[in-house]
Image 1 (tube, rainbow, N blue to C red):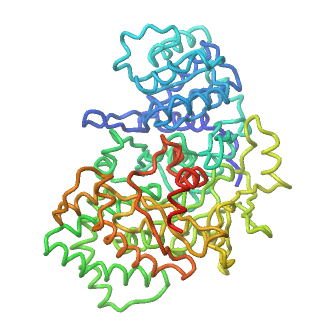
Image 2: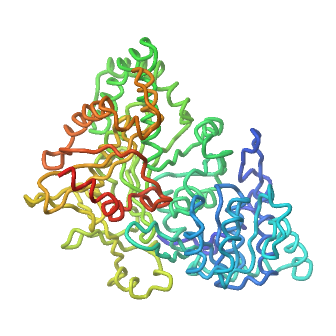
Length: 602
């Protein structure tokens, strides 16, 4: 899928939209309870002067600029400005530790960092003496920084003012810089999660990113009449594919919630056309629905238990292409008006045309429940290296699949079961790692490292990372990630890691519990406890989980059923290297850390 000639870079798309819709609202940000609007002209000016300011500070083509902060307009203006000046943007996850920030900033050779607030500024001040290439740290939220006397610091407003002065002496510099770039230039270096080793810098061109976003929009058509919510982490490639570049391509309004804790409430106010959440967010939404129904009044619980099976009946029939009687449709209409419509509104999904997820596997049971309440949630298969690979099409959803390959994407499965991908959205290589690049890009194909099957209808069935596929002593294979996604369908299980191996006869699991929901359960059952560590080890809690596990095991084939489990006294934590910053399990690290605990299970 070729990128339209003339608008083949991200800054060029911004320039085009400024020409088309200068006074139309491009972005909205909620601050102190009030929505602030920014027109395309506002965004264009911010990016132009910030880009010129960076150039006046010495930014040269190919220089790297790190960005870290919450999803706010300034993050994206900073990325666009970097690219407009010929630089390369590199996002860092907002909850990264100083050591993680240091690794990415040092490995990328970043000359500048654009950061949100005092917390992120302090991280760079702590490590600045170890970063030989870093010249300036530019912050956009000055709160708490007034008395910082550090030559390396500059405010975003100061850099923008430098850009205004630069324009006076070189009026057409910004336009010349933008127009001389091509789609083959590097737009971003994304540092992957690093589930097994140090993060790798994935080089992505403008062409690759825009191509992925166009493939996404071929499945989910968006226009300037649509509303989007910036919800995925800006440092993850999925943000550009699902949200930011579609915002630029179609002109949809991009909305920024006030803070992560108010996403659902703010989304309800926006009424987006596209609901884009990661699997863990959809799991959390479903878990909250189930928990609220457990402790709801008897009337509300009765209504839920009466109408939810109707929702399942209709959605299952639709998924299987079956026709239902007018009576079934009528009773479902009543269920929709009484239960599902208010529920969708409470979740902020009343105006949603498209609901999507991507990043990792979502349990078919979560998908089925979301469909039952009237939301056609579709799986999307995206990797940093291969871009937008596949998606469910409308009316062709299989709960166990991640859809058919996207337009212009070729796929095949190797003899070892690994998915290979070929398209113009594949990455250019790993930064400063030619050997790994050569091992991944082979004969025009990108090796994904994922174990995938292709069914008779051409749907991709994602199993797990190839290196994580397990095998028991009996020779039976199992996919840990698939089992873990089933376990998270439990109201009380927040996370799980499945263990087994060739020396073992059965599958077991270490489980993390959802403390907030478990605390409600304990209160309801008058179970006293001192802290989460105490509550998680109660016999009553073990019995609760054991009963739920029996239900979940019934959905799994016999060899993949979890025979034993242990309840961990804490949650897996990215700050302890147990999870990546995208909340994926660091499997090898966890298994080594809890080796004695695992051995006691067997």
